Image 1 (cartoon, one colour):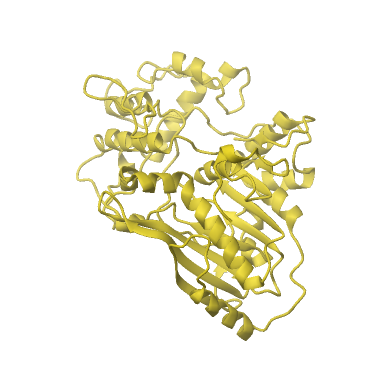
Image 2 (cartoon, helix red, strand yellow):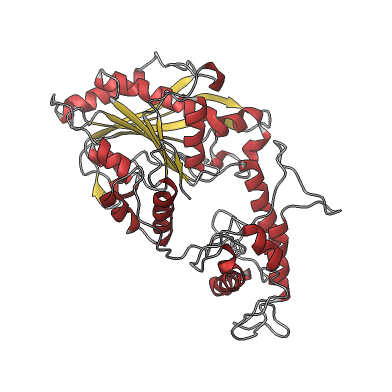
Length: 443
C-alpha cells in the first residue's frame, strides 16, 4: 500500500467519520468473532518470532527492533489481563535531522493469537506533541483495552522520541520531523501495521478503525483528508489544530507562571520546574467561579458552559471583576487571601490570555506561520503547569435527547464517564438529531 495525496482521489463514500470523545458505540458494534482456526501458544510464539526477519515492508527503511510473544495473563491494562499476543516494535526512516538529533517513526503493533483475533484492526491515536510510543493496547473508552477483545492494535511516537531531544518541541526545527508529526508517521505506521497483520494472520483485516482524541483527534481528521481509504471508520474526539502555535502558547504560559512561582522553584526528576505553587487548585477554582459568574449566562443559558466567547472577552476583566453576590473583588486590594487573587496572578492570567508577544507588543508567529492567538481554550485544573483562563467550563448540562450516530444504550453508557463526556454526548445528540449526516463533530 502506498501513500496517497488528498488530491489524487475524492474521499471515499464508504468512510464514515464519527467525531466524538468515545469509541464505545462504534467499537462495540464492530466487534467480530475470533478466527476459526486454532493455534497453540508455541505456534503463535514461532510465528511472532518470524516477524523479526520480515523484509518486504511497504517502506524500505523499516527496522524491526522487537518481536516478542507475551503469554496470556503476563501483562494487564486497566485491570484487564491481556491475551496471548505478539508484540512488535520497530522504527521507520531512522535518520539524523538537520538539527543534529535522531529521528524516525517508532511504532508498536500488538497482534492477538490467531485463535483470538476478531479480524479487526485499530490504530490508537497519539496525544500532546507525542514523543514516545504508547503501549498498543487499544485505548477506546469503555472497550479498553481493545487488545483483550481480539483487536490488533498499532501506535506510534509522531516521528520523534522526547528522550533523544533537549526539549519536547525540538522536533519542530527539523522540517521532516514536523511533517512526520503532522501526518507522515501515522501514514507509514498504518501501512506497516497492515503489512504485519497480513504476514502474521495470512490475511488482511476485515475492518480497520482509527481512534483518537485531542492530538489523536487531529490525526483522525488528517486520515480522513489525506488517506481516506486506509480506514473504514474514524473516531476523532476534540481534534487539536495549529500544533506549533499551541506549543508556543504553552511556552509563553509557562514563562508567565514561572515568573510568579515562589522561589526556590522545585523541580521534577526530569528537570522540569514545578509551577503549581504559583496558581494552586483553590485559586484556579476561584478564577473559574469568577469567569462563570461573569460569562455563563451570556450565551442565553446558565448551564456551566460558556459558549459566547466574544461577549465574555469583551465583558470580563479579571483585574476589575467583583462577584455580584458579595461584591468581593477577584483581584486582592491588600494582602493575598483565599477570597482573591494577587495582582501578580491576575497579570499572569492576562499575559497568557493575550498570547505570545514580542518586546513591542506584536503577535508572535509559530514556525509554520500561524499567528498565535489567545490562550482562552487551553485551561486545565491542577498539574504542574496550570492554565488559568478557559471559555469552556464543563458543568453538567442536561442536553436534549435525540438520535445521532449511536444508539441510546451506548449514549447512556458513555455518559457515565463524567461531566465532560455528558456534555459531548448531549451536544452530539442535539447537533445531529434527525440530520442523518455521516459526519458529526462533538466537543
